[in-house]
Length: 171
Image (cartoon, rainbow, N blue to C red):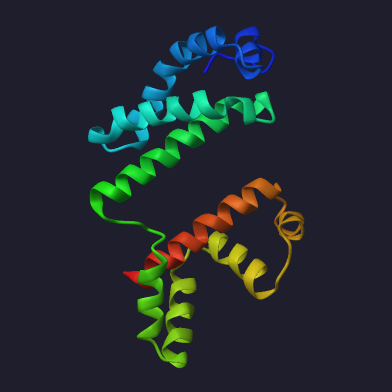
């Protein structure tokens, strides 16, 4: 998106100017659509764009940092794509009920063995970050220092590692 945090259009829309908000919606729509095309099922693109634009119109005044506007807007689109995908496919990769059903079928010993196998199946850089966080109980900052990474990359890697382990366990 070609809008900077100090863009007059963005500032005016953030301040509540309805005409500026209308203009901002027109400017943002092509980028929202392009992003939705990459992240949504093709049948959900138009719905995701419409919902993202509604969220933009309703919640722009609540965005605290205009420097993060583009990231916030793309996160809105991504979230909507996930919601629509779960609805269309009746699938949620973070379905807690499925995790509970799986865990109820396991004994304590089989659960330990399954968890060890899941961790062993991860690439080393993902396994390391899970072990440091969940077993050694280091903070994100401590892990970042130990691995020579930024805290943001550690958080991202930890999230991806947990997702991969969950997929392994529930497959």
